[in-house]
Amino acid sequence: MRTTWNSFANSRLLFGPGSLDLLGQVVGQFQAKRVMIFSDPILESLGVLKRAAKLITGKTYIFSDGEAEPSTNMVRKCIALHQDFKPDVVVAIGGGSNMDLAKMTCAAVSSGKEPESLFGFDQIPGPIGPLICIPTTAGTGSESSASAVVLNSCDGKKAAALSSRLRPEVAIIDPELALTCPPKLTAESGIDALTHAIEAYLAVEFYRLKEFESGPRPYEGNHPLGDLYAEKAIRLVGEHLIEATKNSQNIEARAGMALAAYLGGLAFSNCGVTLAHALEYPIGSRYECSHGIGNGIVLPGVMRYMRPVRESRIAKIGGFLGVTDSADEAINEVSRLREECGLPNCLSAVGAKREDLPSLAATAFSLKRLMELSPAEVSESDLLDILKESF
Ligand SMILES: [Fe+2]
Image (cartoon, rainbow, N blue to C red; front, top):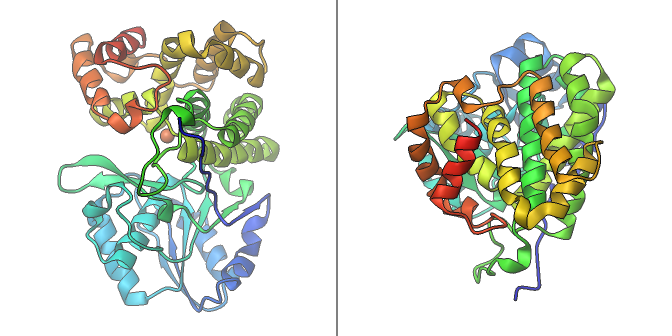
């Protein structure tokens, strides 16, 4: 039986309201003379990028054409800009899309590989250079995770690169930057963070997964440090998600959700995500609903499916969320949170038809890396049952 497990994190986290003001100091630690900023038009219009650039001594180049679903063609455009400007440090400001675009660009430039060849596990041969991530939404956990998801321009499908090289050197989390995040995006991102933490907490134990001879596994399976991250993240979501959604200017709620997202990122990027994320993948691409919406729709059904082998852990989640230590209460509370923050509660609400369910189950079941992280051995028909229950 396996007796060892790994855990990874950024080398530095700078957290708290006003932390963006310390960007110059953080960039200074790398003695950088040229800094490239990746972001998008919304953050540019809010004046965040000019403010960030002013804090940096040395030359800056701002790329502000980031989009919600960046593609590998967009990565290629950024590679050319990066090679032209030759930054010493890259700073990504925004949601997961901007951070993942920066990650993929840095990985492609440093490795000399085409972006499409970076997909999959461990395809990045060396360090990608100093990357500082500054999230403005609270959900994806890209600021603490070792993955990047972009559209593959060759087939139009979302694909993920998974490598410890993709974890940003530094995360700066300034909850004030989330004050302008709209309620819908706050809710969708928040449910994604909750799904990361719950899936990591319920994933198969590390000792039931085989060791890789070549080095650490893409996901270790559940382990004690992952539990620490996940438990705190779930507690924070229970305390702050509804308030952050309903009262956008509440800085305490924004800070709580920002920390939840960071910890959820650490939990899932070390221990793993499993059935909810596998099911979300075909749901999101087929019905063009957000990642958080898809996760939220299937999460209660996934918890119910795992209940026979995770009863006591699911019960504890109830306690973390502020209800009683009961599996029923925990699952009801997850459903309630999803609905109270205004997200759809079933597949038919995003346009799914009953006859679509078998093909959704088949696609999810093909994602073996996520299937093997399930705490109970899972079949395609089990997935179909979860989808029927979520219909
Ligand atoms: Fe996610």
